[in-house]
Length: 156
Image (cartoon, one colour):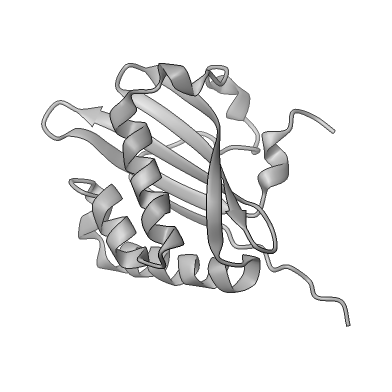
């Protein structure tokens, strides 16, 4: 009996977006750039997040990365993130590593980072959007993960 992978798509956002990765209109953003141009603090936060996920500390991982984020005050969104992350680990396997793919720097205050999650059975695409708030410094405005890692490649 052949197993079929179930797609898991999760989008949590407090920012009105005209497009998402891989959907119509996504070419309206700037071209991806090297991670060398990304502030170290953002890379460190995502690396700490993945480190906690690899230790199966899912709640702590989200609590840390969502510090000061408007998402953190939305209990139903947090519960959904936790549930979908555990479900992704069941379907795609535990997270054993991660690799940075690219980043988009829309402005000095608005940055999107893309990573490939290395799960035992199937890769997972992780996308983090950060906003540099004048009041709270860098906050997460969007976390998305799904099994659409093929979208990391340009064209077919």
